[in-house]
Image (cartoon, rainbow, N blue to C red):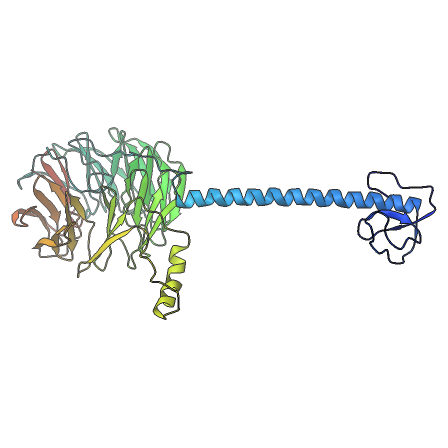
Length: 477
């Protein structure tokens, strides 16, 4: 029977061709429809049974057709999803980071750790240079490790006495303070009239910078020692719970987080819509600032506690054992690159035929061994990196990669350098604040505090602000 016709009910018995599935009169040896297909002996069917077999066959064909359409649909979705993921993870076509994102310090301010989102550590070129004379001093009840921020005539910092302070930058008079549940070692950031800081009580706080009224607070699982960064109304900060967080800077609502594989002590830097952070797990990361999508995973082999420095599209990170790396800020790690490379290298070393030398990791520009452990975050001005190695500050030419000069102190330097004009300022665990000529490395002056200095200095309007473990914040002009 043809599939488009009704079964021939006038015939009493029928047999079904196993090839074309059409009906033939009982006793037919060769199918009348597909020209020669052999019909093996079988039990003949009545007209009603043929009709039922016909209906079952049509239902089967419909199910198979539907199944094929579903498979084609799923396959098409899978192909499109694969293309989307490829574009998402390897290009900027789908999710391009926002360009020119910044909330940098205004002229005359030092509103965040190392002055700006790139952590240059360099003050405005018109800033007056301090000469080493004490302007005022403010006492707290415990050591100060928090590096100060200065904005709109107010200096902000935390103390291990659990308090966060806001002082008049000109007189040192306290405007307001807030007591947290533990030490405040985090360096604050000020943006859009709000000051942000973390505490070892595991909270990060947002306060109205002038009135001291709390705007919001956000809890992590472990202490927040890292300094936050604010860009395009998003707050970025790391916690000891291994995560880098991105919060809405106005409301404190979490937008995304990213596991860096170890305590997030490295302070995040932001440039051209990309967030950079180091990790104690031996990696540096570049993330899309809007959604936290990982763009680059750069292998440093050793822990990175220092904060990245970004200049002209190049990112500089220094490891705890004294390796300085430079990599491209807009580079993107290839798919499974770091998982494949070890096997590739092993086959190359073994001399497997046809296996070439594996390429260097994506983004790598150069590396320099500094011989001694790095003990603070570097600073960059023009073509010079200022890096602290144990008790010595060095000036490194980033073009020739040669050391221009070295300056030795009487203690370990954990204070990140600040540059104003032609002078480099930094503190040392020998208790002194140093001013060194940026060109020659010669000491211009120093100021002795009552205990070691681990905080980084901030320079604004011709005054340098620095905290000491003697529990005092100094303003020196």
